[in-house]
Structures are given as structure tokens and as C-alpha cells.
Length: 107
Image (cartoon, rainbow, N blue to C red; front, side, top):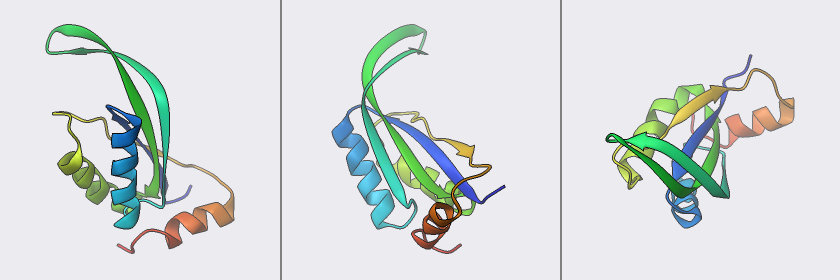
């Protein structure tokens, strides 16, 4: 088990996803943010089914930074209820995991 997390965040566009990733990396809340455009999300919101284009943001961070990262995403995100979910990384290439730790602020 590692301290690393993969955090998933959907955004209304690749540009907004890149803006979020840049802020989080600059503030050392994430080591990296990958923006995957071309996502199609079908979801229920306020009693209606929606079918929308989105982008997916994959953030690499540490578990100890999740609450700070989550709060920052929520403060910057245009959605009323943004997706911010964390998946623990149970294993990985040791030098890569060390890079995540080295590239994020100590907490």
C-alpha cells in the first residue's frame, strides 16, 4: 500500500480541466494532472437525465493532501456539485510514487 491517490474530476471542457490541473500542480496539491477530452457523461441531475460532453481530469496526489485538493477543486469548479473522487494506489513503480511524494507539498 502507498500514500498515493488517483483523483478523478470531471470538467465541462478540456480547457477548464487544464486550468484546474495547472492550479493544483502549481500549488503542489497534485504532482500531475492528465486531461482526457472527449468524455460523454450520461447522468441524472435534478430529476432529469442529461447527456453532456465533458473532460476527465486524472490527478496524482497523496492521501494526506486529499482534503486540501478537494476543497480547492470545489472552490474553482463551475459545477454546483463537482465530481472529486479518490482511488487509492495499492502499488506502483517505486520511483514514480516517490516523484508524486516529492512533487507535492508536505503535510
